[in-house]
Amino acid sequence: AQSVTQPDIHITVSEGASLELRCNYSYGATPYLFWYVQSPGQGLQLLLKYFSGDTLVQGIKGFEAEFKRSQSSFNLRKPSVHWSDAAEYFCAVGVKDSSYKLIFGSGTRLLVRP
Amino acid sequence: KAGVTQTPRYLIKTRGQQVTLSCSPISGHRSVSWYQQTPGQGLQFLFEYFSETQRNKGNFPGRFSGRQFSNSRSEMNVSTLELGDSALYLCASSHDGEGPQHFGDGTRLSIL
Image (tube, rainbow over all chains, first blue to last red; front, side, top):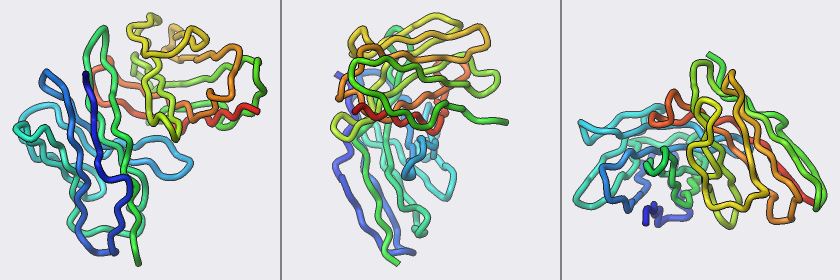
């Protein structure tokens, strides 16, 4: 069955420090992969996506992610975190059956220390 | 370009009632998907509509239904509300269903 695992429920980093959020997926075919961010009371904002090609993808707000097929991973990174990055981050895999749907991980809540 | 618009933002209902939520997709997007977000179950796929046809449905009871109009706007209906239906309901649109999905801010439904 298709699934997405985000092993870290919470992560706390200091402002200016680097960040890596982990994501592992289970899907038999070539995956479409996404990272979304959700601020309190808001919907999901798309940070970046991987469909094919270059395995290192750049997104908005200075985020990047690397697709590693051998590890079934799609980790999100940022070299220097800002206080405004505090939010919940969701990794998702696009799954095709009768049509296309997103399977989400359980999310990682990022806290930023001043 | 306007984003995905969901109305209303907040709703309070009581058990046994029914509710209708509305979603207006990004202009030009023909696919609309609905997701339920709860603290216990996370984000779960409800259904997807394309050109007024339901193409896919998640594992939810028949009390959850939807429809899509010719202008791609979509509505979701929940009948005989239960306490467990309290959630944030998110709508997402995309061009054809395979591209990136863009989400609205959601409707927060509370059941008393």
